[in-house]
Structure formats: C-alpha cells, structure tokens
Length: 429
Image (cartoon, rainbow, N blue to C red; front, side, top):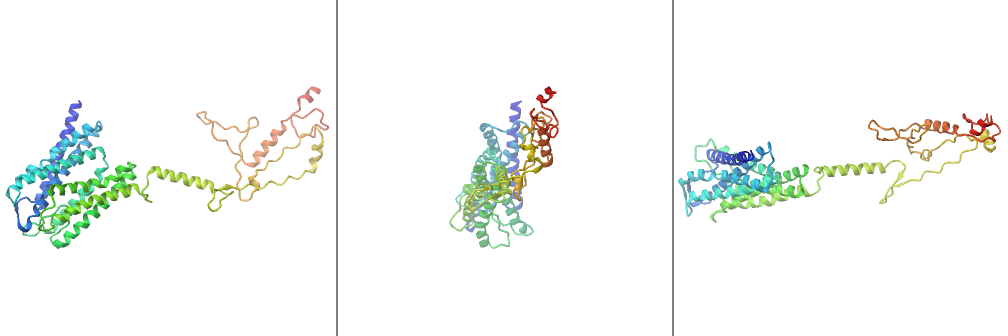
C-alpha cells in the first residue's frame, strides 16, 4: 500500500512538471515570447542569451509546479514529512522539468549563433534551470510559505511578457523578442525599456517581498521564515539569468536585465525582512495583540476612581478619609451603661462610601448560619460570592445580633433587643 502511494506521488511530481514545462514553452512559442530559430549575429548577438534565460526559467518553474502538485496530493493521505521523501519528490519534479530541453533543442536546429552550438546551449540552459527548480521545489516542500513569493513573481513575469507582446499581435512583420522580466512593448523606445527594467524588477520584488513577509507574520510563521520569503521568487529569476550569462559587450541588451535581476534578490529580501522583523502598526502577531489587550485592560483597571498618578510615578491608591465618629444615641445611652445589656447592632459603613466620587463594592450575600459562603454551580465547584444591596447587609447583621444570648443579671430582660432567651435564664425559670 505504501509503495502504491509513493508511486502516485512520484508520478504526480513527474507528470505535473512535464505538463507545466511543455505548456509554458508552447505558450511562449505561440505568442513569440521565446524563439530559438533565426539569426543571432551582429547587433542581435545578445538576444540569444535572453532566450536561454527564458528556457532556464521555464524549466525551474515547471519543477516547482510538479512538486507542489505532489504535495497537494499527499495532503489527502499521509503528509509529506521527512527529508528523504521530500528530496525524492523534488528530484522527480526536476526530472520532469527537463522536458524543456528536448523541445527547445528541436527548435534551435534552425538557429544561427556565432561561436556557440545552439542545440547544446539550449539543452544546457534547460538542464541548469531544472536543477535550480529542483532545489527551489525542495525548499518549498520544507518551508511552504516560500511558495507565495514564487507565485507572485511568476505571475508578474508572465504579465509583463503578455503586456509586451499583445500590442504587436496585429502587426504583419516579425514579432519583437521579449526579455525575461522586462516590459518592452513595440511602441516603447528600447532605451527607455532598458532604463525601466532596472527599476521595475527591484521595485516589484520589494513589493512582493513586503507582501509575503507581512502575510507570513500575520499567519504566525517563524520570523526567519517570514524574512526569507522575499528571496524565493527573485532567486529563481536571478538563477535563470546566471545560467544564461550577461551576454557580450556589444551592447547592454542582456546585461541590463541581468543586473536588474540580481538587484531584485536584494530588494525582495529587504522587503520581507522589514515586514517580518520590524514593528508595524497594522501587522501584528496574535500573541502581540493578546498582550496589548491584556496591558490595556490592566491600565484601565489601574485608572479607576480613587487613584492618583503623578508624572513619571506609579499609580498609588488614595487613602480614604477617616470616618467621623458616630454620635451617641441618647435613647440607647442608658442601655449601654447597664451591665449585661446587649447594645443594638451597629451600622457598618464602608470606608469607600465616605469618600466622594468612589463607588463602594457590592456587599456579599451572607446567610444567617454561614457568612461569606459561595453558592456552588451545577458541577459542585464554588463560584463567586453573591452580592446584595447595602440595606440587606445591615438587616442581616442586625438579625444575627439578636441571636446572641444575654447574661442572667440583666435588669430589664424585656427591654433588651433580643428574641432568644439565654441558657441561664431558661433554667432559672
């Protein structure tokens, strides 16, 4: 069973990369983006390495596509875990991406290139691209967030290529060659296109890196992973240009985008690192948001009425004013002076109640036989104490005081404020 599952994964990686490589090369051939036939001599000598860069980049993209297809298939069953398994899938994807080599070699037979064998040059460029793509596929399998940047950069490259060839599809003459990652429509001056490619690639890589780095940080990925997401897509682009070379010194047709791709790697890494490591007001990790919420709640609790905070000092509680001594009740003064007479239940006043602007806490609900008890919930666990209004608290205290027995030597037992007789008086009767 495991052998059959592994066979499906390897075949999926191989077939997915093969179809991706052949499909992309077919679209590029059909729209005139890539052409290996014709004369690449004289002033057009540097157009040949530009076509080789396309071959290497298409093969690298095909390898990544095949590995991603196998990884999606593995999610339905057991996850693709383990360095050996991931390397095997990446190797199968790289093997399928080499289909770009024979398809390009067939078209390169009609090419006229000075000092280079075009057939073998296309094969070497496609094979190098497949190897680069195999390494990128393994990286994606180990760290899936790196795929986001590859998808963004690949979509940008295809958009620039289609935007360059679409205006010239209705022309009757030969289609104009398009460089990898360069926006150069037929109506745009070639000098302006050369200047723009040094600006478009780094800026696009910077934006893509910032976006993917912020997305990785938003989803709680590790900071090193988020900081490296901006390197994935530009690295494939720069690898393709490194495989093709900067071209001859006749002009800067190939050298300008070559250096632009290298700058894009640095710009993409800078953008993702800034988004993943710097403190941004709108992009925060869930742990940071939770800590900020707890800090705000604590500060709000400290800033309640009854506290004062000086500049640069910690909040300190204001000492409540001492309550004024209660005046003696003339009606009960004599009763208090008689020995054995129980005084009336005193009225409790909260210290916070005497302080203006301070809300006293709600009193606890206490029963006659057990004060301060909490009511258990359905599971039997004690919960918070139930609070009662102040008048109920006073009433409970007064009734509790009535239950205390008095001594036998009281002068007027009936005038005493009690409802239960003492033990000694009961036996005396």
